[in-house]
Image 1 (cartoon, rainbow, N blue to C red):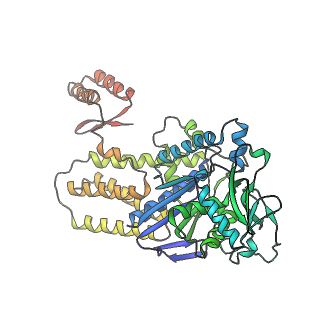
Image 2 (tube, rainbow, N blue to C red; image 1 turned 90 degrees about the horizontal axis):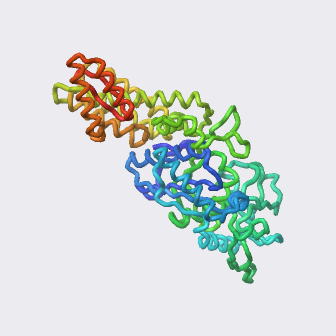
Image 3 (cartoon, rainbow, N blue to C red; image 1 turned 30 degrees about the vertical axis):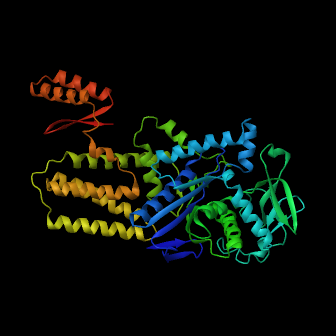
Length: 481
């Protein structure tokens, strides 16, 4: 398997630190508002990568932090007159609900920053001991980037014009600013009650002040807590390459003397009219916004997944409702293929040699696409070719019973990676209430008696109850909408 590694800017053979175990870390959201769908696009890609590795028989463990204390969470919680923990827990809950709606598997380890204070304190003390960090005259502890000779590696920056001791204490700052960044921020009046009193030994003296963590240290501490000094893969969007991910490397490697992450995977931006979707530009949409526009669309979440995955993960895509609606239609076509398959009445039970060869070819090409740097567009091309094959064979009445079952199994294999198939379609008869099934039987009797008015009336009752009616040669089939 090959992965495009941002660190080297080339594809590399994937070799986990301890095969087949894979430690995968992903930056979590800053929970001061609803996550916008650019954040969720990144989460979908991260989920697809984790699912792919599991499909390829790697033993994957994922870890994610939740940023529940930083400049923005403190600012907005105070504006809302809410306690910081209550404010951030509200938006954490919404974010996790968004993940569930989009069929994103929740990471095995999720930790809020405020629960990582001991780990951050230990790392900062280590950096102070090794002279990578220092106490500045503003009362904050900063990381000295001049001390870390590999500081430019991930972002591939030109550091020749860097000035020593330029500091910045904002949690986030301009992407072209190379400056000493804050590890532990001195308390300011605008922080209110949001501080910790921790003791550090600096120049042989103990120093205890009202402080709170900076933004960058949290991910290093979270990864260290659950994975130790090294991880296999670090993920998030391309906007965090610098300074956040570069700073993570500097902090972690100053503490451990080991390479922090072997592989860095970054997904491309979600754009709106050629500009990056962001809250600062007010050109963003949340999942709530999309739900309000399509309030009764059961295929919505799977369509969003399909849209975000069916492109090269490293490339930018442009948001439009027209594109979303195209993907809703595509999901409808996939559902119809699944429905056609379970309705198919096979006369014989065996597997044709040509069918067996085709299935082996399909799976081989699917695996080849996944192993080529998670080439989801090529994997989807294989998937859609397979659905066309299914519909063709059904139309020609070629399938046998064993082949139908094999096709269902193949679709479920695709689903392990894509998570866009409504698996309940393969169990359509089990979840239909008996009274609805009785109406379907009554409708068939009415049609036999040529009482078409009664047949149409019964059909309308079934539809009003939230089900679809499909006429087949075998009689009425009822399906959940």
